[in-house]
Length: 166
Image (cartoon, rainbow, N blue to C red; front, side, top):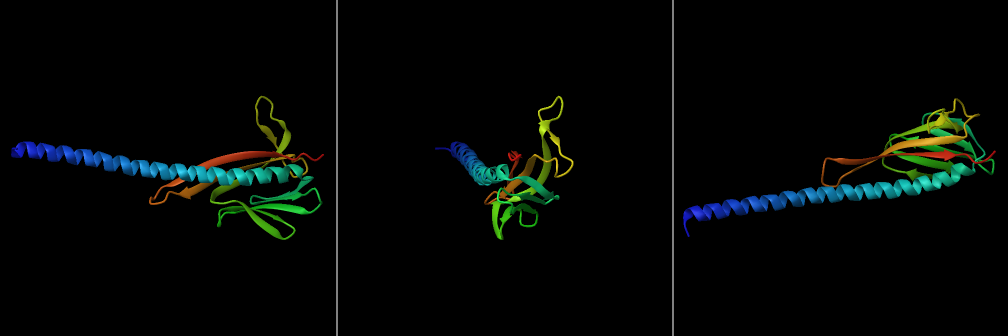
């Protein structure tokens, strides 16, 4: 065995090990990001399902601002959804009991809508006040840091809830 063949074998082994280590690191980060997306999707789906059931049963929207929606619930009690930008949560409050519906939110926006659609589009008409509001759109961005990395995963979702009472 000559020195040249030893050097070629060592160089080839180094390249192969480098490729295997690089692919392992990439697949680890990709798997961690995928797990984050699954976690975000499951949490938001459960929160939105519960919010959909509750908002569809309310009588009307009684007040709103950029971080709060207050509804008159089916039992005439106030039902409030509040976005806390510091904590990154969307919280449901009724009769003094608060429950976090969505976590890890980077942003959240409420849009008041009417039942009818804008002409020539498939989007609902925007409501100008709480009296004509018959639907609510909640648009939010969920984010979660990837373990062992400086990166984060983000997922934007939007849901329209039509108030069924009339």
